[in-house]
Image (cartoon, rainbow, N blue to C red; front, side, top):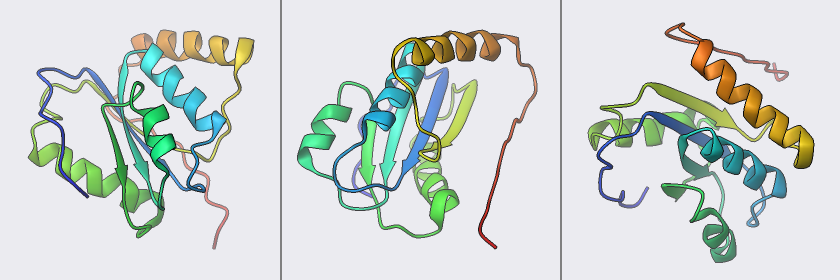
Amino acid sequence: MGSWPQTPLSINRLAIFAVFHRPEVTLSNLGYVNCLKEVGFQVVYVHNVPISTISFEKLRPLCIAALKRMNLGQDFGAYKDPYQCLQRSGWLNSVDWLLFRNDSLHFLWGNAGSSFSSLLSQKLSEIYELVLGLNNNLKY
C-alpha cells in the first residue's frame, strides 16, 4: 500500500473513497471528493487499478492520501485495507464521522452539486445514530 503521510493531529470527519476506473480520474469523482472536502471530510482516495500521475496531481489538493492497490475484495476490500492501516497509524483516534464511499453514483456539478453539499452538511449535523448504512448489490 505504500507509506502513509504523518498522522494528522485531529480529523473529525474522514472518508475512505474507493474507486475503480481507468487511469484517469473522472470528473464525477473529482466533484464528489471536492464536495466531501467542502463539508469537512478529509478524504483517502483508494484507486483499485493503476492510476496516472496526472490524476494523482488532480487529487493532491483534495485528499490527505491517494492510494493505489490491487483490486481484491471489491469495495469492502478497498475499505478494509486502508481502514486497518489508518487504525494502526492512529489516524482514527479523533474521528467523529467515518464515511465509506465508492464511485457507484455519479456526482453532478453545478447547482445540483452545491445543493447536495449543503444538504449533506445539514444532515450530518442532525444525525445521532452510531452507524448508518445503505447498500444495493445487483450481483448474485
